[in-house]
Length: 321
Image (cartoon, rainbow, N blue to C red):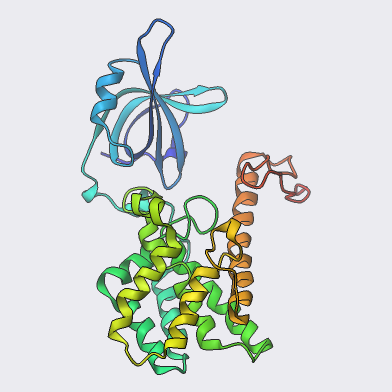
C-alpha cells in the first residue's frame, strides 16, 4: 500500500493509507444513534475524520495512539479537510518507519551526538566526565536520549528534540562561560544534559508524542533526579558537593515554583542556566508559532492567529512584495 501523507490529501479524492490514530471521540446524534470523530496524523500534519456506521463497535476495537489503516473519501468541512471514513482498522506498527509519522528534528542526529561527545571531552572533572559519558553510552538511556522530544507541544516537540535542545544549550553555555569565567563550566555543561533528562521517561514517543502515566504522576524533574541516582553508585569518585550541585541544577532549572521547580535557583550556575534554558526553549516555541502562522494565514497576512498558549498573536513582518 502506498502511503498518502496528510498534506497530499485533496477534497474529492479517495484515501487508503496508514496513519497514527491521534484521537477518537464517540458522539451522539439527537436521535440517540452514535457517530465517531477522529484525528489522524503523520509527520506532515493532522486530518479529521468522521464515521457514521457502527460507531460503538469501531470505537471499542481501536486504541488511541496506535497505527491504523484508513479508507474513505476526502471532503471539505467548514473550510478544513475531513475524511468520511468507510473503514478503519488497527495494524502492527513494527513494519513502519517512525519518521514517517512523527515530526523529527531537521538536524542530523549523528552529528548532534558527535558534538555532545566533543563537549564531554572538554569537561575537566574526570569523575563528572565519566558519569555523563556512562549515561550517554548506556544502551537504554542512550537511545532514549537521542529519540526523545523535549516537549509535547511548545519547544522541540519532535523526535530528537531533546538532543537538539541539549546541543544548542552547550553552544550558548560555551559563549556565556567565556564572558563570565567565574561560572563553573563543567557544571554548566552537565546541566545542559541533565536538566531535562527526565523527559526520556516523562514522554512517550514510540508511536505518538504524549505524556505517559509515569510522566503525568511524577514529572520530568523528579524523574531526572531518579535517573541520575541510578548512575551515581557507579561513580563513587564524585564529591558530595558536586552531586548536590548537579541535583540542584535539575530541580531549579524552571526558575520558579509556578513553573514547576520544587526549588528556586540558589547558585549562580543555577540562576544563569535557568535563563539560558529559557532562551532556547522560548526561541524554538516562538519561531514555531511564526512558521505555522506563515503556513496557515496566507501570503497577505503579517500577523499570526491568536496562539492559545501565548494569549496573543505575533507579528510576522510585512508580506513580501
